[in-house]
Image (cartoon, rainbow, N blue to C red):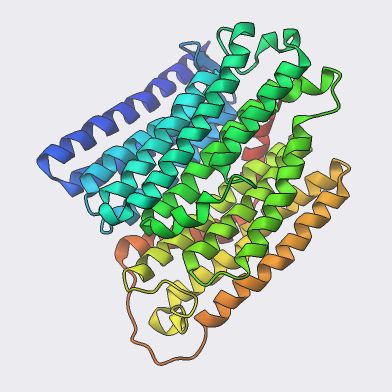
Length: 472
């Protein structure tokens, strides 16, 4: 009873912090105070993060309003997501054309993330994904008319995704009016209807997660958007879609294999994983623009995460959760440096020539982030890939693990091209990193190195989260 009371209090604290953040940032728009917007955003995000962390440590489960559920899974994700959102706020402080308006939209992103991570029903997942996507589209436009094209592309793809998601939802509604994640009525649904809704959900969420062949929008949106927004889309938006995939497929469709059909949800994600990895890595090989290179790299990283989901076991889910966090901070740290370099009109692979001479810390940090993405030890990316490939082997799918390893070797080539350019000796003028960029890069660097050398705390937390969702 005491645990439930504490969880209820902490859940109320999280909701209050998010509401207060939206209100405070709306006030900052009217009083034109960037500092108020930044301080309130970071302070309240960390308050929500701490409350979520305490919920995770309690190890309990609490359902409130019959729509939200606080447990180890939701609490872990909402411990980490607010930290990443705070990093985006720091990066955007000096680089957003209208930071006050940006902070309001970022507050709504945080609300959307809450709706998805704490969802006990399919309805908050739908609303949360829509809020995150719409807010991100408007964030791009805030920076000026020249960014209309990527904003419209993101908006249209998000609209298509939500439309497909809603149609899949409507197919399940007659069998469970509450649409809770347990979906007790699953056993009464015909296998063909359930199979069709499964495919529709997979298609809708694959658009958000940038899985093949639904990822053609990613390079254009990444390249055309301001780098701080690109960091948001790559580090937050795509990761939220993976949370939704875990919630829907690991919980709702886990029973599908008992319905006498040869098609499992794991088969769908196995195919998506293979094609997504190869598509992202092979096209990244020929890119000259850095943001497009990281766009295709992010696509391939989505393929790695799908490995754990396709395994459909506790180990697979644990590995996917771990790698979601690993890539979140690798990509945000990388795009923080890309954003700073864009302010100096450096966009392409050739422009990065001699970066070590401009700023050694930026050069070394970007190198470490890319080596981690490639899966080089002793960095967090290596641990994440090791867990993913191991879960595939334990799931009796050695071939998928080998395909993942082959793709990791392919990625080394294009990361090495960038690193080679960075450390070319070339007479250049030195320049210091902006303070906020240096803070974000440093914190991301600490995460990548610390959890690479000592990953056990994050592995344990991921395991608890996996048990919470697999056990439903």
